[in-house]
Length: 339
Image (cartoon, rainbow, N blue to C red):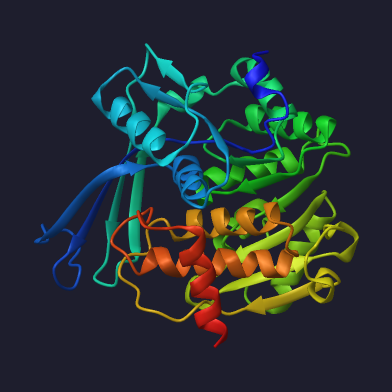
């Protein structure tokens, strides 16, 4: 291990990096035909977006992922490095091109459908993660997205548990979150645990196989995850905000806010007010804001508010990662909401 990583103390993000293509119609989206509109091309990927946001918030972050030996891969690396993300542990694949993701938005900026082409992420395997284990051991926090294989996810969770580093699992999509159902409820899960998970309602249904029609069903699905060692669950619900589920047993003891530190149970938290231009990247920004709050020592409830603020700032811009995002902007957004 290189001595530069001793006592790294930052965040390790493990997940997808790709080129995003987002198409939005000029008027109402009409299916089965060509729609005049705008097409945006940018760097993307859930893990990549989270790492980028964290670096903009002045959190030390190492990104573990794979890009191709091509122009798109160079673009992703250069943008991350410019933002301050440490990328020298990323894999440059000689076999696969950089991943591509296409999203079709409606006239409101909400996604109608997305298609991902990312076979390159097969290279983020157990062997790769084992070689980077020293980084996880010296980190303060780990974020994983479900672009990884089920085997890689289980290995990473096991490693984080062994070295006692808190882990957040971002579930990405309905299809990709199904891997977690097999992992969490499989025979090999045992006594493993996940400190934080951030599914939306549909992803929560896919993981727990519980159809959620009301708050009682929502609580039932959350309880099912709790019984498998998921300690804090933040269900993202779009324009409804989030549904936070936490237990006082797992709240950080060094919380800055003694009142909120004692929060336990389930509660709805409304979204921050503001204009919605494009929802792409909102969930990734929420995760970054949440991790920022946790790293800074705030309670889970206050950290979630940082996440909501970061999401609101992102949806009010045309970019999946808001380029002017910064600590000051995030704090000001919270203060403005509370005024």
